[in-house]
Length: 147
Image: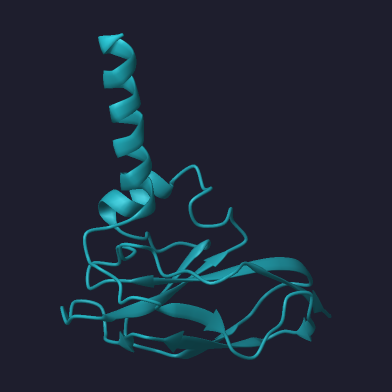
């Protein structure tokens, strides 16, 4: 019985770590894509305008309460479902073709995407690129880029 309780406690603590960093999010904070709807058909380059309610934007490296900076998860599993999300929480969001950083405090970008279907999800990161607790993430949207 003791092993079961210990195992359950470890599993629960792992779940918590996989879903939230150390920096608190403001209550009711929300991040969203302003100009694109799920299912939209667009041409490249694709302008993406970031929306944020309940918190402010600050560049990476600037530690200030109730602020963060934007990241786009591109063409990968939704936040919380990715195989690398525990690493993402522990060490911050990486910078690669699936994790786009806007650490300068940008509130929009232009993406050169090839023709086809693409998924986008916004994630707000703290001064170290770590998602807040609780995470401030948008819904995943799917867009189709035409030639």
